Length: 366
Ligand SMILES: Cc1ncc(COP(=O)(O)O)c(C=O)c1O
Image 1 (tube, rainbow, N blue to C red):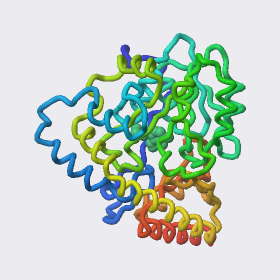
Image 2: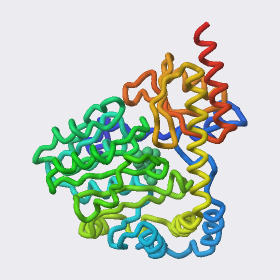
Image 3: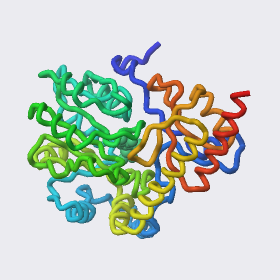
């Protein structure tokens, strides 16, 4: 029997399924050398300067953190050329998705996103009582035209992951501008730019330049290029009034003191960011060539991961890869049974992955 106080409307919500942790695979399969290419983390680890700053912050752990992220906010605002009042930090951008939804919540409200995208929009949207409209991707890319067509007076927000997770595709400047022209001011358009630093493309939209003119919010994170996924820091860039409203909704100490110190140091370590970008650009080429040689289909990616289709059931592929000590992500949660997402790793990790994949494909074709 169900416990009475538990709300009924969460029965249909699937909890977020994270990438399988390395330690879990080591424990369960008794494999010592496990490579995780499942959660789009930075293969180089955190910046050494961020580690040093985190250590330096440890003796003050008896104190509450600065709720406003004072130094981090000041540094980031300068770096981005925006005002501090346009910034809000969160316990990862995950938390900010929830904060945005709580800020715009209204009875019978709807949000629009894609059917194959970061699942937190749907999970958080449902938990917050929104009807979530999932519009099919077009050629694995957000179909902004179709999404604009789904706007109704009930629509409160549109969530666009750019580049998209898990497909790695992006919407262009022209597509975004045409889309924004069709969107009423009552609708918040959220661009989730978790992978923006990897998207070095001419026609990739500069949403930051639209700030102040449009009802847009940008989400970014320290979990990807900055290598600080374990510390949980993300930020939102938005209109001053929207940020002020969201400030009232967030938890008072949502970003811990160690995370704030490490994030500040990570911003200073430009060499590390460059090195991470260079690694992904070079290794993406390596992976594209290796996958082509294996006859594996992939979608061209603007992020630090690649979306692939093999002839095999992806869940079975996932299990076989695990046994060879490589964790990838299968896409059955989207009903994409032959598709997987692979994070770009170091050359050693990528070679290990390709060798494992080659062996499994060979075994499968026998
Ligand atoms: C598109 C997208 N947005 C947000 C996140 C979550 O980032 P954070 O670690 O800042 O919560 C992810 C993580 O994978 C992501 O892919």
